[in-house]
Image (cartoon, rainbow, N blue to C red):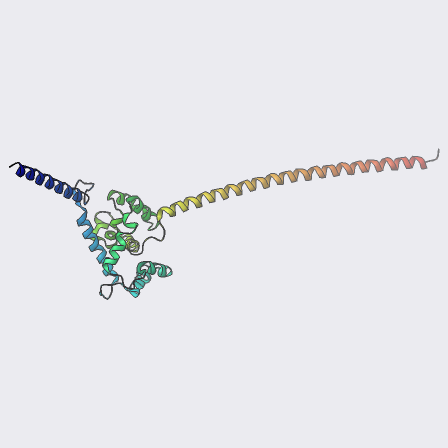
Length: 262
């Protein structure tokens, strides 16, 4: 009988441990939204995969399940209008794979640095790269982060109009293309680094301006000193000439007295 109690207690202990482990694992996939709703991150990841699949299909013109070099080239050149960057973007997208599948695109995207961007980093990109900083408040309010950029690119559930309030067709198309560019090819340079570079350029510009001002000031002072020196030289020259004239007058007077009869 005692053995049965020990087995029962052990069974209950193991069951509790398994339950706690399951809840802990599930907790990692659950979060709370800003409006208090419970969000299952596993469902988000599944839906994110479907959005990336739509992006892949957008490039896969022949619907053979892979994006070939010609298809990515046409997208970069015709839709993005970035023929100058075509080689760099195409090499980054394909790497050593001539045909990119949906799974490969998802793996690249989900492991990219952009996927883990915070809302602040997305806002920097929105302002510095897309030049649509006027929508910063909406992006912050809706907490748009890097993992949500494929939804922005494909305007899933009209997110641009309904959640972000972007009613301009031109702004929507521009934002969608830039977001798709970012998802597919990654950033050319991180926006944060661009901003640091801007600070560096600003500091350099201010330093050059101060150096130019100091040089002009020194030039004016030098010109003033030279002008004063020239005036003094002219005055000295005039004094010398007056002295010479006086001396010549005295000499002439002396000679005239010597020549006059006594």
